[in-house]
Image 1: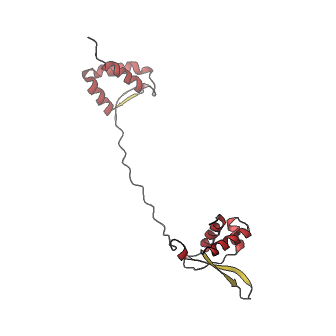
Image 2 (image 1 turned 90 degrees about the vertical axis):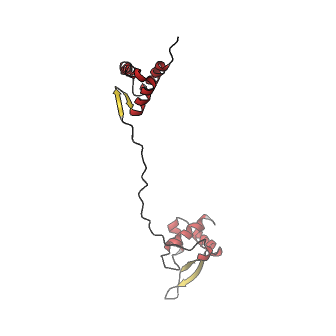
Image 3 (image 1 turned 180 degrees about the vertical axis):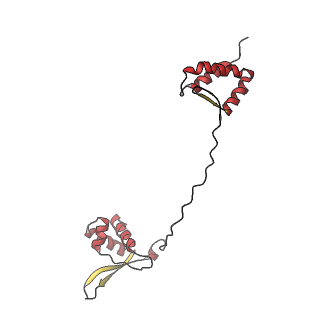
Length: 165
């Protein structure tokens, strides 16, 4: 199906109210709504009629003059019949459990150790932990928030190296 035919079909279906079986917008109205030429709208209507999507019937006014055509969608031709769409109440997003941020238990300048980090140091250094933290306090005066972790890890690696015999 060509784009113009799809535009015309959407326009006709937009005019269809719930419970109505036909619509009768003029070709000029369909063209204006879709920003297409009247000739293009006519070709679109003819494509829809010849493709079996709509039954197009002539209409006359009370004086017997020709007026806009009647367009009836062929619902059997479509993959599924029209459905009334009821608005769905929006649900709140499911709650996401966020792991709590570990509490900071030791601070010196920009250096902040949480409980887990402190416990890891305590496990690694044992009774040398206090001396290590004192050294970090002295050395860490010049450290920045960007490099304190790397500097602390470098010092820790030095402290954990086995002593030569």
